[in-house]
Image 1 (tube, rainbow, N blue to C red):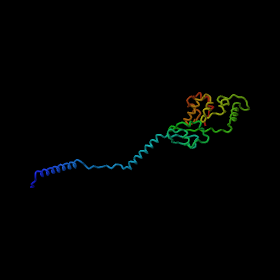
Image 2 (image 1 turned 60 degrees about the vertical axis):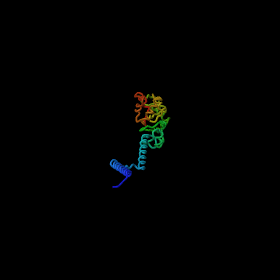
Image 3 (image 1 turned 135 degrees about the vertical axis):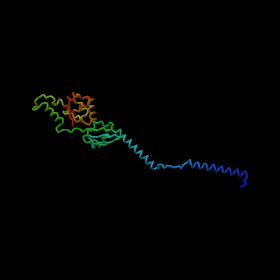
Image 4 (image 1 turned 180 degrees about the vertical axis):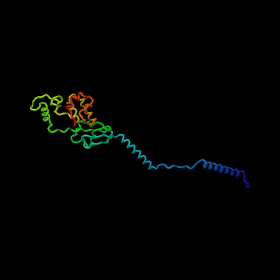
Length: 234
């Protein structure tokens, strides 16, 4: 064989050991480690679209929570159901409905009231003046009721309306349009009770029958009996 010196044999032995160790390490890596697989993630454009969709959905959800829907009716140009932002006032709903119609009576409504969801905003109209129902005609008609034909004195039967029993102006009070001062002219109705009648009317929209006055706190059957011939609804 080869005649190697001691030093050469040492170098060869070191190289063999190094090769052996390297082979062992490489084999161990192949046995224990697999291929690294990188899963593809969403593209930047797709991520931006997803974030935009989430923001749009959040805006829709928040807007649904801050809106109120109300029914605007009565003496407005375009009655209907409208949606407004929370915190809107009655005046805002009336503007959205086209504004006040001719003959509207907005002084009977609190135009500064904050709207609540599913509320009804009713704007009453001024009562139409009946032909010949001016102050002179009303007073003359009331006088004829009280005096009878040919000016003869007669005592009206119980429950009959006379000039002395009618409110100031000689006309029955329309409880759907009467203001505080006009309601105060009714017997037993003071300023506080007149205010409750107006508030109750604003809550229910309008009175369908005079008997509904008894739904107002403070107007019982006895008080209604005393004023039922002095009130009317239309």
